[in-house]
Amino acid sequence: MKFLDIPMQVKALDESGTFEGYASVFGNVDLGGDVIDRGAFKEIVKNDDGQVTVLWQHSTRDPIGVAEVHQDDVGLRFKARLVMEDPMARKAYAHMKAKSARGMSIGYDVLDGGYQMLQSGVRLLKELKLWEISVVTFGMNPAAGVDGVKAAQIVTVRDFEEFLRDAGFSKARATQIASSGFKSLQARRESGDAGEVVQEMIDFLSQFPKE
Image (cartoon, rainbow, N blue to C red; front, side):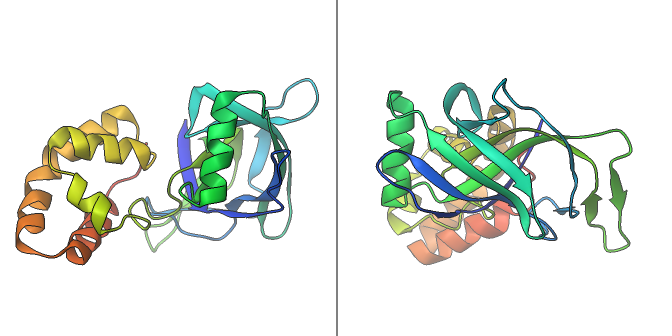
């Protein structure tokens, strides 16, 4: 399964846990060089009530709600309801209200022959299978919401791995990136101010897809 994020574009988040917005936007190139074609979701995995599972941070161990989804001219629109009886859903609700969770994401597979490589090097995704939508910490740019305090807290490789996991990278990808790039980030942190560290993270992480 692959993931694709966008900044959170939701409205009407109320005390009942109901919210709506877009989980994916057509025509938008992500950090991995992928762009979803209009109407690309050919298969959508739904429960018996015709709804898609909503996860917290793409964790199948942490379902937090269900959503009705449909495709329009903009992207994959959803109307979701958090299961507020679940402590994890209440945690997600609190972070969404506080804007410490600022992204929506989708979990998907590319169907056989379902993509086209463009001359620009961008991969146009034309036929997808949607598994789930997720509320995630960051959208689109995995380091966009990091401030100087967060950057200063990353003092070990393990800290960096945990940060990458929070940003939506898989455990294997987070370990790979941290092992190859922590020393260079650490050197940058020691020589520059917090703002420079954040920009360095953005530039560095933009090289890596989250798969």
